[in-house]
Amino acid sequence: MLKRARAAFYGWRILAVSSITGAVGGGLTFFGFSVFFLPISESLKISRAAASLVFSLSRTEGAIEGPIAGYLIDKLGTRKVLFAAAAMMGIGYILLAKVDSFVTFLLVYLLVISFGFNAGVMHVPMAAVNTWFVRKRGLVVGILTACMGLGGAFIPPLLSLGIGHFGWRTTALLSGLIVLGILLPCSLVFRRSPESMGLLPDGDKARIMADTGPGVSSVPEQADFGVGQAMRTGTFWMMTIAMCLRMAAFNGLVMHFVAIMVWKGTDEAEGAVLLGAMALLSVPLRLLIGWTGDRLPRSRIIAAACGAGVLAMLFLQYAEPGWQLWMFVALIAFPDAIGPISWSLIADFFGRQRYASIRGAMTAFTGIASAVIPVVAGILFDKTQSYELTLWIVAALLALSAIAFAILRPPGVKSPQVREATSAA
Image (cartoon, rainbow, N blue to C red; front, top):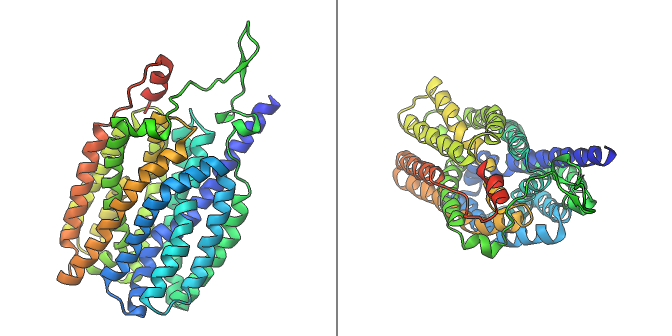
């Protein structure tokens, strides 16, 4: 009983620090860059296409970095990787406050901020919770992503407030200090896996078979694919395509979100509030989707949410300032809510042991896909002074992603126990 309580304590503590890491890091860098987008563009006198290029190159960098980060997490553990990544990210924001040209902005954002964000925040929290939980995976990923949504809900409006009162440079400096003050202590709590501590996932205890000596986990047997084995399955590539389409669409939208709202007739502060509202509305949805995903096929739920995103983009085309933009926000919260939980399909289909490495291999492709649409949107706006075509492109990508997720199936497995473990996905 004591060992089981210890396992549960460590598991939920890992979830807590993962959630804080995701909320602070994701809210500041993934959602927050949209708030910095226009002030930095105007201050450095660069075009929107050029500013978008920085963000897009960071996604390409993430594609290269993903397999390496995944390998290091599996090799060194989450604690060491997050500590180094958080230090780089915090120092990067402090340096961002000093940039005075496009070149220095490019170097600081890519080589310091983005490097730390991609290695730490993008991989460590999701790898940790998918390692420490199996049966409760949908619920805990729902909690993790809900906290990420809270970060996206509150941090962009706070950044906008800070930029309005103190300027974007002082706000960037304060952001770096916050990252160092919160994420570095959080990193020290992480542990490699429950097995490394003589424990089991989900706070379970080993049950002893009647006539044998060894303990047997009460966790259902799962598939355990290596990276090469996973990449030889059609499931890996169909999942990668689905992820690429969804992430390309959503990264393009989030990168230009505030600018799109300004184009639709709001001011920058209201645009930041709408961005925060989208993330806030996704919080209860992430909890609901996480809970439902433990009972219904996760891939079908994700497909339905992407379908809601298509409706949102079509609605935004003709929306006017006021309640119509809020209706768009309510709809687009659905594909926002399923983003991180979709990564749980990797553990569902391929197992926990090499989760970070397989996820890293997949991000090698999703990172490149995510880099394209923000730049395309910037180029199209610079040429036409309109985001209309961009919205049609995002809608089409979400529609294709919905179809890919809808037809996604687990890889072929021989063991009945493995088939049973993956059927819930």
